[in-house]
Length: 107
Ligand SMILES: [Zn+2]
Image 1 (cartoon, rainbow, N blue to C red):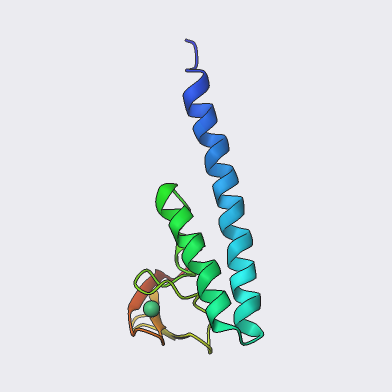
Image 2: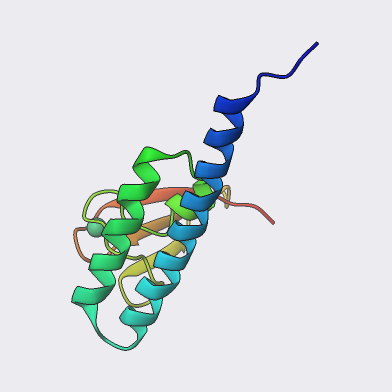
């Protein structure tokens, strides 16, 4: 059986480029946040989440940006992290808008 040719492959490449770009933007966003430039950080993180919404990106990337206000979630700066009861997931709270998201806890 022949594998379908162009379209899925092109999609795969586009997805890989998008993932790569998102990852770079998140690094830039984190660096900006660490140097105290909240505005620049927010610009990078919202751009990253815009790209993410067009492509399927792994949950590990998605959890780094607040889905509501788009801020980069840096523990202790823009987010607080706590282990939820039972220890099955981590609750990450955005300190900017107050949205809480849950991360599945993996050892
Ligand atoms: Zn938020």
